[in-house]
Structures are given as C-alpha cells and as structure tokens.
Length: 369
Ligand code: OSB
Ligand code: MG
Image 1: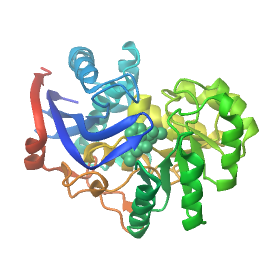
Image 2 (image 1 turned 120 degrees about the horizontal axis):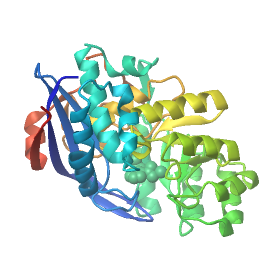
Image 3 (image 1 turned 180 degrees about the vertical axis):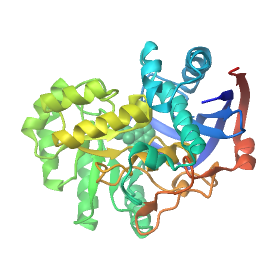
C-alpha cells in the first residue's frame, strides 16, 4: 500500500451531556485517531474506540496506543504489500486487543479505498444508499429519559434504546410504553442481571421490546442460551461476542437471536463482515452498535451498515448527538431517521484539521519506511 508513515492523534472531547449505564457515567471521551499516509500524500483514517478505563472491555486508550505502536505498526512495516482484507490475518499473531486491531485495520480500509478512488461501502460490498438511524439514551432518571426520548423522536430517530438494570427496569419501561405504546423500543442491560433474575426478565416480555441486549455476564454464552429458552423477547449479544468464532458458537447454542456488531469489539471490518455473512445465512439478525464515537468511526460504521444484513437501525446517530463539533466535515446528519451513505472515496468524509488540532492531547508520527 506504499505507506510512508503513521500518525497517532490522541484526542479528548467533552460530551454535550453525560451518558450513563449501571456501570458508570461517561462525560468526556478520549480516543486515538490513526492516520496512515502513503507516498502520494493520501491519508487513510481509523479510530481506536477503547475508553479511558476498562469498564466496557478490557482495553483502554493506553493499551491501544501501546499495541498499535509497538506491535501492529511493526507488522505493517514488515508487510508493505498488505491489502486491507488480509490485515486481520496478519494481526492474528497478536492475541485479542480487538479495538487496537480494528483502529489500525479501519485506517487501512480507508486508505485502500482512497487509493482505488472508490467509496468504502463499495469495497465492503454494501448495497444500501441510506441506513436507518437509532439512538441510545443514557439518562439517570425516568423523567430525564422521557424528556430525551421525546427530543430524539422529534429529530426523527427510528428506534430508541434505553439502558436498564434491576433497580429501575419496570418503572422505566412502563413509563415509556405508557407514553409511546408503539415505538420501536429496546433495552440494553450491559450485564446487569444473572440467571437468578429469570422471572424478572420474563416479566419484561410484556413491553414488546425489539430485543434485550446483553442481559447476563459480559463473557457468557451458556446462561444466555438457558435464558433465551424461557423468555420471548429476543436476546441480542453485545459484550459476549468478540470474534466470528464467538458469533458462530452463540448461534449454534441458541444464546441469541440478534447480534450487535461493533467493529471495535470484534477486531475490525473484515471480522464484522464475516459475522454479518454468517448471521445472514443462519437466521440471526444483526445491527451496528455504537461506542460514543467520533466521526471517523461513525463513518466506518455507516459503510459497514450499508451491507444487506443490517436491517435494524443501529446505534449510529448523528454527530450532534454527542458533540458540539465533530472532527469530520460535514458531520454525520440524520434526516427523517436515515443517514445517507456517502459516495466520496474512502469513508467519504473529510477530516476537519482545525477541529482535530483543537482536541488533540498528543500526536506522534511513526515512519514505515
Ligand atoms: O453497550 O452498546 C453499549 C456506549 C458505550 C459503550 C457501550 C455501549 C454504548 C451504548 C451507546 O449503548 C452507543 C452510542 O450511542 O454510541
Ligand atoms: Mg450494549
């Protein structure tokens, strides 16, 4: 790919409003923007979506930085002829560290698409020109949740997701259903329950949720298979699926009917596509999850969600959902609940260099020649 150098931009931005789950609250977001520059001066961009602390997965911004700089970039340097579609095979000599791998792999995909003068969605096999957009609410009280839901529905979002835990699930969901009996609604538990809560989870069937996301432990697929047999709400797995192999096993065990695909969590776009293809053939629904990310990762998610299996609106909201000003220009916009898949080369959005500089904490260039 003729890559001359990599630049790691560590950035930080305040969220417009804090986002809460039962695990904690995110008020500001750090990330690494990975830029790969080729000999012709083209730049490909990726985003490592790990958080500052390991609350959602074991990775952090610092572990990603270390793994990308000290292990993955050296692999790239040794393999100058690498194609984006083969990067995940090359990176498999490093165990786990999915978000680090996905960040660098996504920059390779963007660069390769730009070198070929083609949009990323075409390179991935996308078939949609627009994708449905859903939004996740992370408010602390029922009142605040209802207020935010009203605002998001007015903005046209097509599917609402709320965070639940045993402390407020019935109260929150009954308040929402009272106000909005017919909206497409789902709940994400981020592992707030155990199998002991089976009856409580069974009671949620009455709310006609599209699905319940990750009710049980973050690393479980066995108990989920037991639970799925006793509730009618479809189970969607998020944290439990960190690879194609996990997806296959969960499907075979009947642990879920839906998988939330996040490229960061599964190690990149190739792995995401593999999970997508398998699920499409095996009757598992998929949708694209979110990581409170910046525009670079949002753009990669949009390209991925243009694949045929992504029929359920994902957690791909507009840039203004979280940010006063995103680092891409124009920002991602949602019109009538849909996002247009851009037709420009690569991710199809430009980097706003002024904004990037404004939010940069640290920048380091690494030579690949
Ligand atoms: O569990 O899907 C999740 C945000 C951060 C980490 C994990 C999750 C989430 C969300 C919101 O639910 C996704 C978004 O709006 O980007
Ligand atoms: Mg989730």
